[in-house]
Image (tube, rainbow, N blue to C red; front, side, top):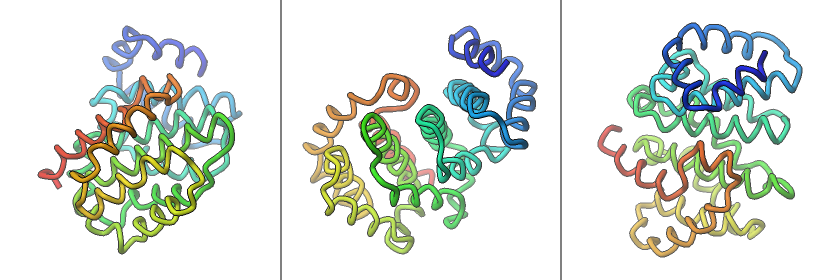
Length: 232
C-alpha cells in the first residue's frame, strides 16, 4: 500500500488528487509513520510520498502544523538507508522553505531549527552519499539562515564554528565550495562571494536527480532566503 501511495503521488495528477483530499491523506499517513515501528521499506515509501506531496504549499503548512519538521530532523539524526535519508532531507528542505515556518519560528530561536545544525557535525558520507549528503545539508543550513534571528545567533549556537571547522578540514570539494558562502551569510559578506556562488551552483547541478527535481538548487535557495529577511 505504501508503495502504491508513493507511485500515485509521483505524478502531477496524483499530487493534485491528494491535495484535494489533503487532510484525509495526511491523517492516514502521518500517524502511521510517526506512531509505530515500520519495516524499512514501508517507512521509505511513506517518507518519499510526503516529500513529493510537500512541493505543494498547502501540504507544507499542514505538515508543519502537525510537527513533521521536528520529526524529520530527529529522523535524520538516526541511522537510515540512503533512500530514506535522501527523501527525508528533501522533505526537511521543502518544509523549511515555507514562509509560515519563519513567521512561527522567528520568535523561538531555540526551537527545532537548531537541531538540524547538529547534522553538520556528521561525517561527509562515502561514495554516492558523500556528494548527496553535503549538497542537502548545506542547502538546509542555507534555508535556516534565511531567518534573521537564526542568522544573528549562529555564532552563539556554534553553527559558525562547526561550519568553519568543516571548511578547514578540506575533506569535501562541495563543502569547500559551499561553506565559505554560508560563513559569509552569517558574517554579512555575501556580496564578496558572488563569483564563488556561481561556481558553487555549477557543482550543485550534479546533485542526484530525485533531490534536484524536488528541492531548490543552492542558487535559488539563496534568492529565496534573501526575500525572507524582511519577514523575520
